[in-house]
Image (cartoon, rainbow, N blue to C red):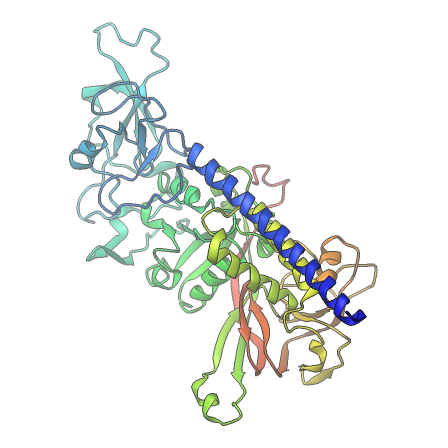
Length: 532
């Protein structure tokens, strides 16, 4: 056997051992997560909001509304294993009796006739703690009642709870959409009639179940008890394009998800210019670079709906540049293939890239779609990115010598490229889970802004270079700031826009300014010490 053959066998053995080790680690982790999910069931997972009837949760769940530890129907004290409460209206029942309440007691009504008075919706949430004897002088038990809309608590006897006092939504009246303002046709919201109050600015919650942290179902549950349920939208059931048609002309929006979810929502809002909606981020993705850039942080370790609402109300509205990415495929050799490929137009709010970083993102998306989706978590995602990035150090996935296959012109001026495997166009400060590419190192560079009509063009030499950047041990290739760039791509290479990757064939890629969106910058800690 020659030297070259021996070297080839050695390299094959190394690659085989490497992939076997990675596969074994992932398999072990998945087995652990399956066993963990069976022993400790996540009560928030896969519970869908019911348009008619109550939406039940285990009383073990974290909650934003109070509830009774006794069943509303049979009155028995409920153990955690059998205790349920409605996440929307806070009524409680055991597993044996909750179907009875679905038939006898209405949940929060999302719509109400405008010409009829809207009363409090009182729910029994237990015996008053202030009543130590559990009864008054007449022998009547004093109960604690909670209004599912205005958050008021009152203590009275059971037969005095059903009064005819109209509800004014008290605590969150400036952000709640009253049922009398909602028009519904065939079970779908068609229009929101605005209130005449100038301070009224409804809060709309969007959450994407497919985001990296796998906790977005918890977000949906927490906010349905405090707002009108139509204000809490599951993006996997109702896409932003559908919900944006009935949004009030002026509102604040909070999206629970990663960069892809936020960009999806911002793109949908761009299509309805009559809606002036400022978007805040609840970081539930993997990288959360837009959230970091706006001061909302890298993730949510603690979820408190009241604190989150307080932070959103104090947040400052600021513009965010919006960019149109136009992809014109090159015609095939026979001409026939070119006619089958249409021009593609996308909106970018965070970043766009061609090369190895997009290839790693594409590898991760494929792995998550195949076997990581059910047991996803941010730490597992980080580990997967690290492993897949290390794998691309051995195989660049067609991104090697990218400088030979692309021609770049920024504002009409050709850019000479050094040996690179990725070209990144940045609109925000953070990239790659918190890396501040443009400002790394001691070199003086022009100021970076997300609302100056310019983006930053940088280059990355390899996946190892990405790892060194994330550790602060290297600097990127900084090329220029530009308001328009044109990339001629010859051959096939991975590409991504705002965290959504795909394989891109030969094409002319143009990125140019397309207006601005409104986002919410998190209040500073001296203004609000409740930030998550």
